[in-house]
Length: 214
Ligand code: SF4
Image 1 (cartoon, helix red, strand yellow):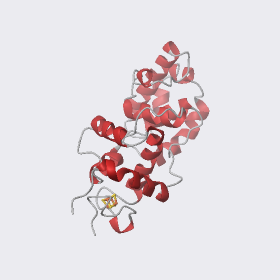
Image 2 (cartoon, protein in one colour):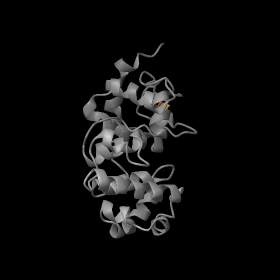
Image 3 (cartoon, helix red, strand yellow):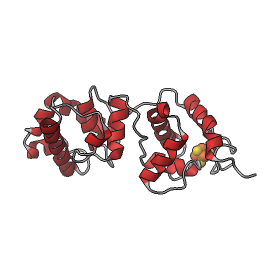
Image 4 (spheres, helix red, strand yellow):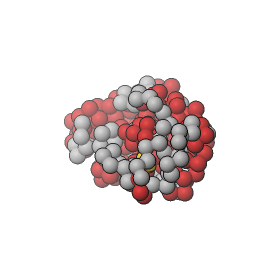
């Protein structure tokens, strides 16, 4: 039997994810927009668990955008050296904070157009910051889990991150964009793994997921 279009399945998919992951939330530790911005830049191609081990000391030492902007780059590199690509990430953090100082009065901006001007900040990072630090639903975070699961669930046929995001934004009520991202990431980590999805433990029936293996 052919599966229904995504637009007819999405309400039940969202309900199933909500039941399975009612507490899904951002797994990066932060207390303010600047901390989340820095943590998100550090988290590229690195686990949130490792980032959360590095940031407590970092956030104690660098408390404002000015602290990062005026930091010695070699010292900042040493302070984040446990994460991969730490040299590039330290450079991005310093440069982003210099721009925040110069153009945004030392405060992390809360608009997409402004955020994506910052070095090291693309739409995905901006979505994380907007959705979690400002509660602004501007888009949906499409990371590797959300990409894979959107395709498996038949919510998008696209392979490009931005096009997948557009498909999801058309399907999902705006108020749920950030929450949906967290639930999909949690589902990707716990059940619908890249190598072998654990369909037997998945709340999505074969009427909801075209990739379900009996
Ligand atoms: S049914 Fe299987 S493939 Fe579909 S979302 Fe669940 S775990 Fe993934």
